[in-house]
Image (cartoon, rainbow, N blue to C red; front, side, top):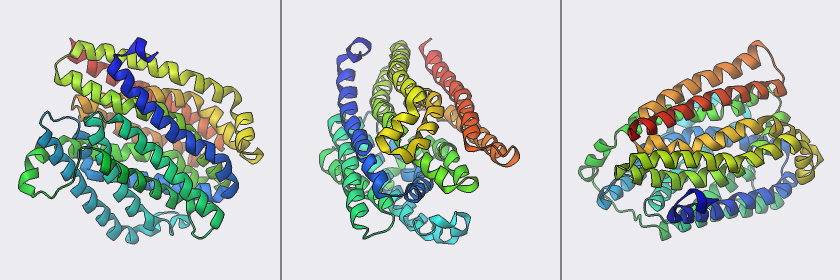
Length: 416
């Protein structure tokens, strides 16, 4: 299918990304039946809540400048952006470490102990993100893919060791950080990006040129990430710990194909789209966008059908009878899963065209409507979790449909 839809270089790049990311997603997936027997529903609930909070804080790493590393034609400018993103990540992580203790009361009590790990995760995730974008710029997709396998392997080994030994609490949380560190160390040795100290006078030029990334990228992305974690936050506040734990497993399992197809595709799609736009080949970019949409849909549809029809027995067989509830959640979320799988990777068009303002407006709309919908369901109508998930799916289909139309319009306007 790849050779039919895309050029040979794109096919090879996506294939290497999917192979590496596939292994990276398959390894935790294969280990999950063991992890569900080593860790309780409460452990999964705690990990799910921690990762939701950490993901929100991680939005602003590097001032979003790491996303611009792919764009400059001049290699020296790209390296300056890389160094700038590292500087800002370190400063940001230190700021979180200093101010977070003052805001513990705003978080659920069960998160008190693990909040101290948030700045550490943000630091390593931010540095890792900078190196990932360097590898994308230089088409080092093999190293990129291997790093993701190592990230998954580090997570699994650490989780198994901590799960069996019980020497440390919060095993899944610590394992997540360990996997990120392992991946970063590998990338630092294999990519063309090498950190060296630079003064502000060296970085001021690129900071100004790509100011739209922090200016229009951070707050909308911050709102968007909160929106993506909104369901977890609502479940944490208004529903039982067991339901949160069951949803935590559902989230982990659905993230596997989203990572395999979506993330792998997005990295290569971004590089290819940016290259086409830089060369002024806008009509080709539109054709490429349409073919990418079709390819993503064809890959996501079979997974969605399987989840929709056989989610409950599949989860019960793979993860144990007590996790059938997670399979029920997966069946409900199957349709929105396919929609996200198609639309999310294509959002790179806004980065490639440096039109982040349009994406930011949608993200603000998504934030407002997501929380308004979920809060009404939980507080006003007091829906049970099954009803809540059904309303959530309908909301996702509508909002991501709007997002796709904005993406298509942006490429279509530039091709005429």
